[in-house]
Image (cartoon, rainbow, N blue to C red; front, top):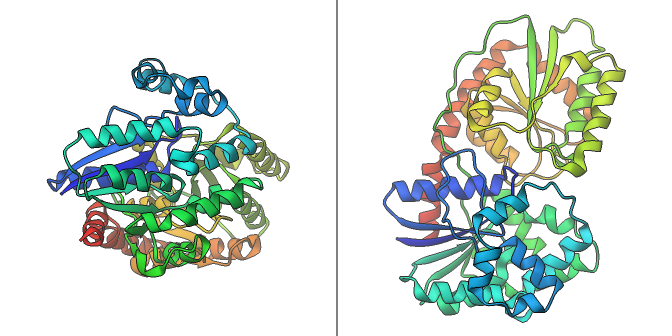
Length: 426
């Protein structure tokens, strides 16, 4: 099968959607399918072998200039590629940590969703002309509904290709947009739903949620559970030591709930009879979230627990695997109702049980893998109770770890994801 899979780069940040798209494309390629993984906005960043194409469409610099000036809407495509859309320029621009205002993001999102009728129509034309010059694709996969304006021009140029769109977490972005951009963006997406043949949700939870959120007929949605590459994953016995390590591995963002874990940890350390503890965190941190992190760190310091906390920052794949194998359990108590849970799958694959809020995709992940326990969301006291239960029962942790590792290999591998994707295409 010949597949064009569009993926959205996230500049210099590790992005769960990028990593999922790359793992899927790599597995489909391994199975012998002809897959082009096409980045938009910026080159993608993954911690595995990057199988994306060298060319970037809708380059972030070009899109920005065309939004701001009518002059750049008429420059020849070869000028754009020479000056703005090459990987060197885009990576250089990505190296600068810039806090982007919600107002700018709102304008950009609406302009993108206007498609060929908006200020960046030239970018849609360049993509369509490239596709017309290519050998026919059987399937064209858009990475999320924020790019759904691509569906109609891709359909016209795609010579009969099936047009599918993945659903994998865009509601968090849309809900963060100010009005009137939020409402306008949702309306533009809803108007373009008929242009897509099938929608592919990363979990059963998200299929149901997005059906109502964006008025997508439920019969148009297929579930393709997220999967991970198991290369380098190893479920090995935990080291014997006098303390228990509680791990947090996710973007350092209020939506991921580190503040709940920080509060629960402070509550735990007031309880008698527990073994010595350590709190270990890792994950990418945007500049706008540094104040949030510093506040939580100050709370731990004020409680006299600063010496028990370590923040490891953004990790390479090898460092991530070591981190996940080293902690005794992983807890990411998200505020956001998580549709994917990539970090949970990675922890389970490396033999680490998880404590997760009972919402989003987490209940179905733990039902299928058996690798952890669920806790009431946004409740630090309930979280402390669940963590205490795990801390004081090493046999339970070992049992959940073994079940979770096997469950991920059976249900959430990249090969299982690819099989579900191909079945949805069929």
